[in-house]
Length: 308
Image 1 (cartoon, rainbow, N blue to C red):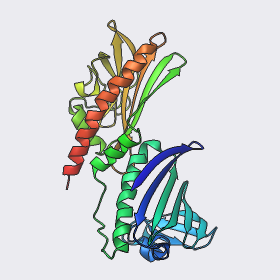
Image 2 (image 1 turned 90 degrees about the vertical axis):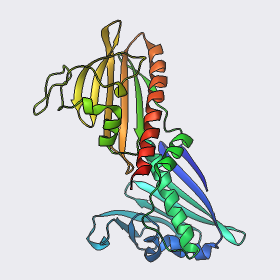
Image 3 (image 1 turned 30 degrees about the vertical axis):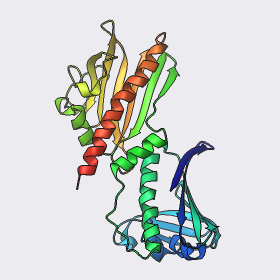
Image 4 (image 1 turned 135 degrees about the horizontal axis):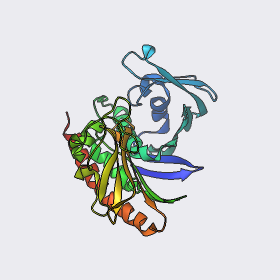
């Protein structure tokens, strides 16, 4: 298996190559006919097999009763090329003769770069299932991508890197990282059980229905390079924001936000702001938070793979 992730026209292009010991004529029905697709593709598919034909995708054991999303056939050239859209995402399956077998080239075009490791690990399981079906083995629908596999794609595709941006009044460091455990589990590992309460406003007062945050954040949310000041916003288990200090005075904000992810777990968005004239601190923050997030991600992956 050979995988790559590139950017083209502002979108992400995941490409997976897999050599199969079967000719294109045998593989073609498995990648185009609904009764075969349901055995390895992650949704129940119905399609009109012609260019411009309508496609529907549904999930659940009773596909006819499940919510549907739609797409269209963009290319249909047996037994060589099948391309289609699924809502805003594009898919392409190419079959190239390769001796007695063929080279399958699978492409997925999407916008969510931080979700690329989830997509790649999921498609790897799907294509391994397809390979087994072609060899006559029954599909194991209980298979799920391991968290370690997910993390290997994060590393391979450079998805653990953050960015430093210049703003109108200083700088901002931002990380967006797909994790492999739900927000509650991430919060607990960070020590968030010591930081509970409702949403608070920027000045630390209680928002309607919330409880005022007070004190300093748990150590798991901090880094030694930027001393933590007072918590300014708190909504467990998804949000914690606090001031960081320089020379004993607030200098900027650090914000941890756990949002819905791509199926493996929560999506972490971590941001730190700093004042103008301290650009070097942006590079320091980039390194410090990378060093903080990576052990967290590894620990969560180990926990995820221990789950039943």
